[in-house]
Structures are given as C-alpha cells and as structure tokens.
Image (cartoon, rainbow, N blue to C red; front, side, top):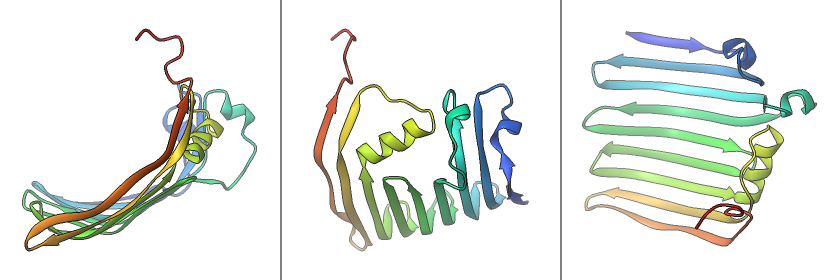
Length: 169
C-alpha cells in the first residue's frame, strides 16, 4: 500500500489542541510499504514553531525552523538514503548512502553549532538547562568492499555552564 501524506499548511495547534503549541508544517511524506520493506520521499518544512510561553511572544513569520528532505529505502537487507538533508538554525546534516546494512557506500556529514542550536530552541520555547558552546563538524565516507567507514567527527570548543547547578552529584 502506498501512502502519500500531504501536509501543506498543517497547523500544529489544530493537531495537538491541548498543548501550548503553534507553527505550520508544509510538505509531503510519500511512503510505500510492503511488509518489512519501505521506501519513499520526504519534503517537510516546519515554519514559525513555538511552544509554551513562546507561542504568545513569537512574532516572526515565515521562519524555517526545520527542513527535512530526501529519499529513503529500508528493508532487512538494504538501506538507501538519497540526498537526505536536515537543516535548522545552527545545524546541517546530510547523507547519501546505499548498500546492505553491513557494507554501505556513500557519504554523510554533520555541521552543528551548539550555541546556535540552543538559541534556536530557546527562541521557539524549548529551554535547555545551562548554556552551550562549541561545534560538531565532520564527514564520514563509507565503502562496501572492504566494508568500512572512515572520517572524523570533531567536537571543538565545547563548553557548558549551569548544566548541573542545583543537581546532586
């Protein structure tokens, strides 16, 4: 069975009316499943998201808080991520991989600015304990024969303050 789920202009507050939540999800999730095999395409954008007290305070309009797109396929033997991207303020994750679960071929990259991510979350009403600084950057390259993944993902300049204040050791 095939499922195409259009979510153009889907208002989060209508879907979850008991939560202090606002924002709009735009896009399409197209999924075809047969038993344990699934494949599809995703093209979603979350706009103007806000939670809790930020619902009343948020004034920006048209702000893309999260964008996810790409094609995928998964079964018990195979994985394909074709041009998968996830971007948000301070975050850019990309992957193009294919092959069986033990011998993938392709690349994945991650670029995350922890302070910008924490600020972006606070702006939409999700507060984290403490403050965060630093970056997570790297690329991985997968080869099927011999099956291996190589690369570096580096956490640099990491600092946090207030994360454990007032909590028992």
